[in-house]
Structure formats: C-alpha cells, structure tokens
Image (tube, rainbow, N blue to C red; front, side):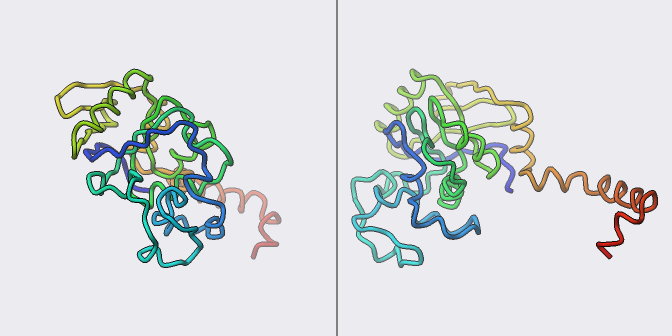
Length: 215
C-alpha cells in the first residue's frame, strides 16, 4: 500500500448525499478480486450513457458529458468532495478499490458509512470528516474556481486552501500511522515477521509434534 503523507491535488465535487457502493462500482464488476482495473468503471451508471459490462472497451462507450468526472476541469483530480453518508449500502471492498484505481487518494465528506470508512483505511484512501458548513464552503469555492486544488497534510493534520486558509482535521492515531507508513493489515503483520519467525522456531523446539503434519 502506498504511503500518504502530503497531497496537493485538484478537487472533484460530487454534490450528492447518500452515494451508495453500488453507484460507486456496480454489482456486475464484482467478479474480480485483483484490486486493480476498476477505475474505468467507477460511478459507471452515472459516467456512461450505456450499461457497462466486465471486460468491455470503455474507451468506445458514450459519456455523459455533464457528469463531474467527464468534465475537463476535473481531470487528474485526486481529492473527491462529496456529501453526507458517502459509501452507504453493501459492504463491498471493491468500492474503495475503484476509487483508488481511478486515482483518488482523499475523500472529504460530512460523514461516511461505517464499513466503507474502515475499508478506505485498509486500501490507502484517506477519508476526512469535516463539518457541514466547511464542506458547503468548499463546494462553493470548487465550483467557482477552475483548477481548484487543496493540500492535504496528514502529518500536520491540516488542509490548506488556495488562499492559505488552514482547516485542521482529526484522525485516529493508529489509522494515521498506517496511512503515513503505507500499512494495510498484511503490512502490519509483516512488520513483525522477525518476531513471528522467532516464535515459530521456539515452538517447533518445544512441541515438535505440532509441526510434524506440516513437514
């Protein structure tokens, strides 16, 4: 998992509340568990005029020009600004996979669905909760300014706006540590691999019969 320390990037505004995981990545794309390749189908039903299918050539599909991700001013965005209860619905981990594969590193909202919120941290996405008034002001500024970009500094736990205004944010210390160091659940385990190997060697000496079936 890539580390997230400081990101300066264009913001894409998704002015919708209660965006569910089936909208983020529709059910027909859930057959793969590779974590990659989902970006072209992110928000598929809102992004394209036709119905998407796995392994289809998305470059030839007709786009909905009014959809935010299809507008030239938001190309290359790595920060998604959205409304309350983002990521509700089913618990599919493919939703953060699709967001990450598209290129989003940060999602800002007044609130998130719990399971989606937790899945973001496990997949290298920073979900930031800001109050309604702050989110509303950010929407106004993003819509008013083409190329509007924010700097999200996880180390300092602050967002810096283009005018220099600073917005502080809170984050659980353990989750912050994992994002800063690029640690998912597997990475956290591998960080202790020397201790694990030492323990297994010790147990093999103390109780060799436990390991006989594995040899």
